[in-house]
Length: 356
Image (cartoon, rainbow, N blue to C red; front, side, top):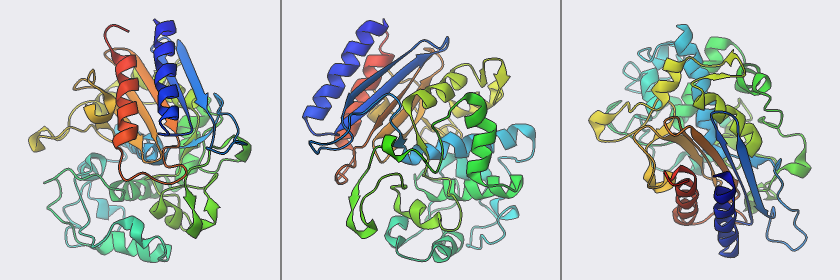
């Protein structure tokens, strides 16, 4: 199985590189037993002097951060009883002073069912002082009643990360390292990559000094990092490290005899929480999204993608999970995710096909 899968993945990545979707890519696949393949193709940039991508190349995984580790840390608090999905966010963050403050629950953060009524995206405030951005998040009214609409944005994960830090009394990077990354053996995963020679650059942003290399791509996350590590973006990692995390999820929260999450907690990740809205999302994870999970995604296939061109997908029923890392935003961001989602879907179809 894996030989055929590897050949198909390699051919698809090579075609994407030829079509200038991205300069390089790593795709890693694992199963419940820990059998895995890692396919590597391309270079870090389009320059003739660019370095080759390697298995241990480190990528900015952007919004994958929302699930790994932010949502998973919150879910650990929930399973231990220190946090409830029905808790008011303002009980932990009293500076939250918008008109809906008494109605916004932890559940709304984990399901992305609140949306700030901003005149322009949060990223457009990248030149503002971080204190002003945080005040904007705390005081802006919502566009809809909490829970009335699914609306993906950075704000819920920023607030969720702050709640996690408030309860633990420690920073998000410290907590992620202690509860997940270090015990899982994810030695190349952090919010501050030290080995820059292995970090794959993202976008060329002249306002920020040129090529972004080892610094978070997301504008609002970059601005807020001056105050705290926001839970929406900023994680740097490798495909092999992500496969360790995904294999733990495939095994319902346990790996090598160590329980990181309870089985019932993992089940919440791949159980639809917003069927009443005719939408699909798990707690802290996106669920059943064929636009990037492909045609073989089921109602319990869960994962998370990132603006930079990254993706993680887990299917417990099939016993398969994969990570796809690329720098789709290099040298500049594309108008939309159409081309990267075509590649994501094709890779997902190769891996999740019942004929694989």
